[in-house]
Length: 220
Ligand SMILES: [Mn+2]
Image 1 (spheres, rainbow, N blue to C red):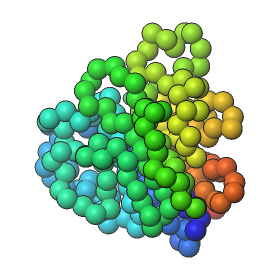
Image 2: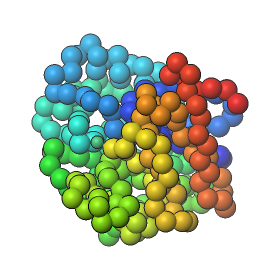
Image 3: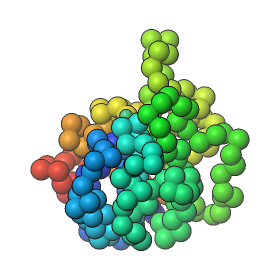
Image 4: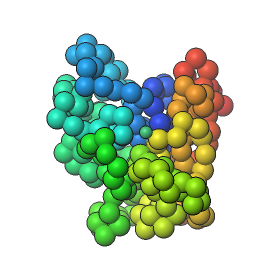
């Protein structure tokens, strides 16, 4: 089965294109969720994503960590919307042949934002692809070392993931050393695009940038 994973740095989703492929939406952050998030908004957020024809996996970031008052903890129960860290840091999605891992921010403080490389990923079965979702700052050079939630080339390589979906930067950019496939998809509101990641057996993850018009994915 061919599977696609869309990733974005912000919570808006767009309707998928018609077609035979199954999708999973991996979001490394919502934009600015707060503990004061009203119940009606939480209900709408959950209902809209639960009704989408794909599973959504959200990773709490530094603006919306899994503190005790986190709105994620007040979301209504859904089948189709999953939050990394509530409770699992590994989510298996057999219907799209994906395993999604991610380390949720649990406080506003600095931390290492990637799953521990010593934590063995689930045993790889044929055709199952590994996605890691992370929220942090990629270290492009010594000038980045004063920042928080650092992600280094070696960290990405150690993950052994087929695709690393990154959030924190609002711009769209590929990072890390080849052959590892790691992207900031950018905020859909600012980048005006999302990344659609196509996984096919025997080939590296292929990333397609899809332009958004009025918040919706364009055909083509
Ligand atoms: Mn952030």
